Image 1: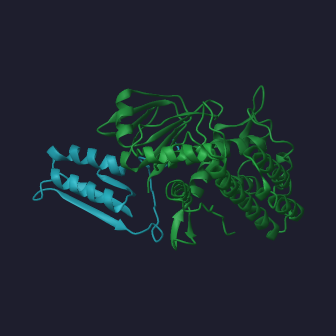
Image 2: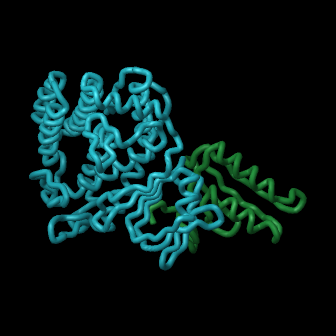
Image 3: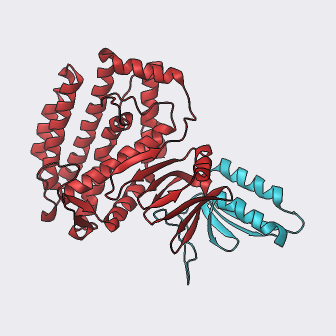
Length: 330
Length: 87
């Protein structure tokens, strides 16, 4: 199974003997090019065109993050899976509300179901989340009645608001009280964890989209605007609760991440490099862990699950098989 | 599958073998590589190596494991190259 490489050290990425060489200050490391899925760059890294050439032929994406861990952008090699047909159908779906709404609704409904699965797990561990579950369940019934995307997004926002309030019941550490969701920059530890985790998920989904015929610029739920990729944000909604949020609860409740892993910046709070590494370790372990897929009757990793979800979207768009989202079972 | 690959090639071909292996597996110490690899990539690797080796003088041994579950990795002394994917 191909692996993601995360680079925090400063140095140079080089092409050497048709493979990748990372030249750090005190270490040099060869990375087997055939086993690299994507490269995530957090440190100060220089690279040249010859390197990009080999990366492109091997179809490896390079994701860049700035000093604060914000997503900067991706070196997205030329599309190797070109399909004008899929792009046309994607645009068609996006521009017609009658086609777009059912898929958008299904995405939100799946995301909410996964939120409920996470909360129910913690209820069985005698955490006081029952009232949250009831509120979300009653709000979820309203989703079907939504007329347009904005209304749908508003419902999703409200549900997420209730869900985030429940974080306080799940996390038993007073240093990580959830008060209000704050972004760019996050103002406290818990928000910093949510932001970092979500940006990892968006990036992972983007890596997977590259391996399908879909165009990441054309979203379904999220508006397609001039700047960003949007399809990855849609699919990430489905996986954020079961991957990112679970990691946050685990890391805090097992005291792996403590206040020491954050630093105050002039405007907000950030994870330190050590904190980021701890999070990434947990994140990659989770993404590579396998679960038994109910329909395929096969063990698949979470990473694979994301790809399967994209294939389902693609089938919906091209062949008209109704998209049904992935709901975790525990 | 998980493989451990060891080779003993003649002086003229040893550098070629090293370069080929580096593309597919992680170097752990002189003439030894390990890593997870798919069946297809594994075939590519062995084909490339067979092309450069001199079958009368060079030897190539590959241990294959279906999973790492029943094995332990013990390092005594210096670990020359860590397998960490977070650099």
